[in-house]
Length: 67
Image (cartoon, rainbow, N blue to C red; front, side):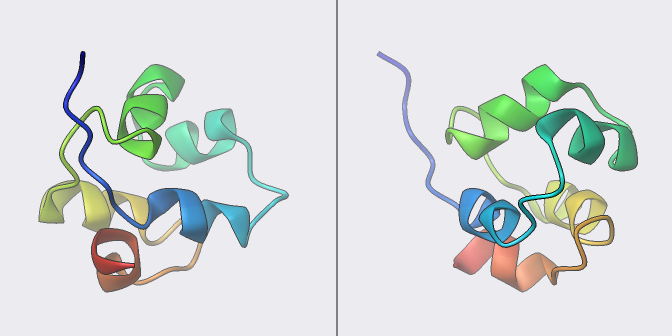
């Protein structure tokens, strides 16, 4: 069983229903698979990831990490 690492990415992404995982991955220069791992808490949401993900959907890194 994989360890879950909750973060605010899923909630932040829900506010941007027009942005798919593929869109977010392209904007953050990563793969849709990595976005899925972050969304499901299978990968740790580091400050580096939060900064890469914050600009495309117009959220602050704090929202993504601490929501």
